[in-house]
Length: 287
Ligand SMILES: [Zn+2]
Image (cartoon, rainbow, N blue to C red; front, side, top):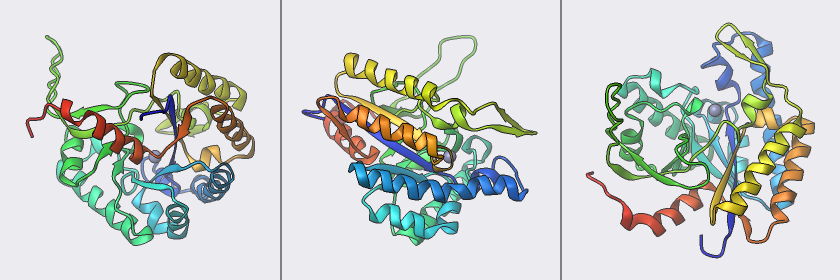
């Protein structure tokens, strides 16, 4: 990250319909249509990224790739990164190890079919990893993961074999060769904006964009001042950020980031490979 005082990564989780029929268990056309709006959002996002010359990282479920292959292909063709995001937005923590491996393989196949890509990065649906996730990602040759919250603006190595003890200290397992590019609910559009009233999910959402803009600007301002070479990762969803007033917010935020000296925009894949190259020798691995 030499020469870059700060890096901004705009990431988009393209869940589309998979979010609604998968974890939400929806069958009503109205709920499903909220996912359909994702493809409208993607078109708007691609236009804004093209206008501003900013690269994006799109985490795409296999179901989305199977349903909207053209949108995924167009995103990849425009130079944006495509990452893995499960098949039907399954929560990995609810799967057996074999089921989780099968979901990973199915997601890879769908992305290969739709856009001829083999992702280097993975973001778990709902940011909920299982005890096997890291091992399975290593097995699949994945380079980085973006679902954990142990840091805010700095990458770190994933671990395997942590031991959870309630009557003694938490035992940290060894670090492995998988870069973590951390996320946070604060820097995610979904809980701020998305109204949900389902039997299994409730969220008031519907925040004013001005409030979210204030939080997102101040997180950046703090990082820019206090964390040299920090990585600022926003997580957005085309079906959420794609609404008009929120797109205007995103447009203002991009301009705000660009006003700062030494700020660049990058894909997560680029950040992960740079960080690995700079930090590889510190890796203590028993693998
Ligand atoms: Zn998602």
